[in-house]
Image (cartoon, rainbow, N blue to C red; front, side, top):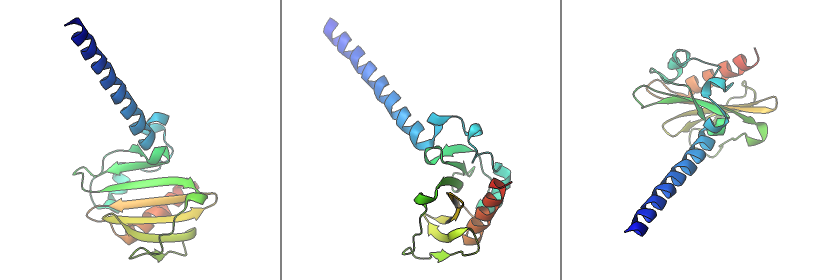
Length: 158
């Protein structure tokens, strides 16, 4: 019986180790391992209230996203969100083969907008960075994604 109790204890340690490892992976994916969202420069660009017009519904947040290179605000009804990400320009994507893709030549370099997972994705290269915005929700559309991209670029240069 003593060996059974010892094995049960080992199982608990293994479960804790698995939970700790899973949390480390989750923290790496969101960026929480690098610090709080309140310290993330991308999260400091907007308040949830300022972003509501882009998603068309009330938002909560912010929370780290995209390995800490971005920030996400989730809608209060969990049916939409806003995501802003800043990555090196070498990561810039132009999904030219996607249905609905179009170039937005007057926003940065290689500006574009594309329908994306029930919302809209807009991106452009500005200097050494690729700035990406994504909007989803009741009021989200291509124009809102582009407007958010423009405003994000403007706020980052202030």
